[in-house]
Amino acid sequence: MKLRSYALAASVCALPAATAVAAMPTTVRVEAPGGSVLPLGRVAVDDAPLSVVTVRDTLDADTFDTASGSAFAQLAQATTTASVPFGFQPFSFGPMVQQIGTAASTATAFWRFKVNGAAAAVGAADYQLKAGDNVSWALVTDWEAPELALVVSGDVTRVGTPVLATVRRVDNAGKATPAIGVQVTYATKSATTDAAGTARFVAVAGVQQIQASSSPASGPVRSPALAVCAWSKATVECPDASKVGQPADFVAPWTTITAPRARATVVAPRMLRGLVTRDRSKIASVQVAIAKREGSLCRFVQPSGQLGVAGPCVSRTWLTALRPSAINWVFTLRRNLPRGTYLVWSRAQDTAGNRETERRTRKNLVGFIAGARR
Image (cartoon, rainbow, N blue to C red; front, side, top):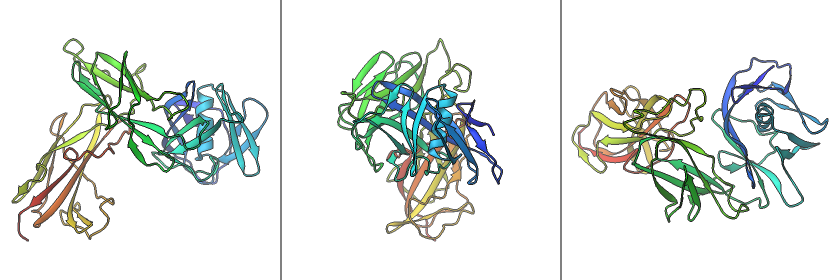
């Protein structure tokens, strides 16, 4: 069986599987103090639970059998595809990664892997990935060293307009806090984050890289490098990220709710409106979730237009909005909302698979009061 990573074939040997396999999208990156060993990239792993691959150490004759959907198999795919040396030591409890590229563990430096920002409680060979998981490996001297997570205000803008970079320190539990005083580089410029973890730039023409890092190198692990494109009257538009030679798109589009307004009282709301940013990949969908507050719980509007049963507000029911133009979206309610206090969330996803998750109060999260009677 051939496994796929970074759109290329990986030479990991596969054992027969009892069930059919399917591609499962994930991402992985590898960082070392001297720089990125593997930049952020997409890897499609097998999600069949009985599918097994044999991972081979490229530095000696060691091998290890692991589930094809494990974090260890994912790393093997990525290193093989990129022709990067990969060394590990097999033990009875699992393999221990020793070298990725030229970066090797020592008596004081070791490889740590995190999934979706949180350190894993099991070894990489035992960690079964899920669709959409983001894996990072870092050669660290301090197990508790945080990682830097970078969010930018869209990846398509106009020359001369603001580019905002928000950076957070993510600890091993996955908890994020503003990263104050870290350096962010954009094109040839650099800036230091403020008390909110934000650095500000002015957009320059073309596709430029933006990344957050710390000094000294033994501090927080640097963020992935993201690509931002700025267009002008001369260039008219940005090239599609899917074109050959263009940097991959890892920036989610942003949405803004324009109606109803935050804290407004609406007698009989029938339509929600908003905006979505332009994106280096095409916008695939815009969704909204509408909930009536019931104490600490929420009753979400269902596809039928009726309110569902009360439950946790994090368990949202997402409904697809219409897009009458490239930057506008609308959602029409099937019936009037009962009187009460409501929350509305919006999110967008592009064709590269980047989905908006950043919550921005009064932007893609708005509260309002519906005044209609039952």
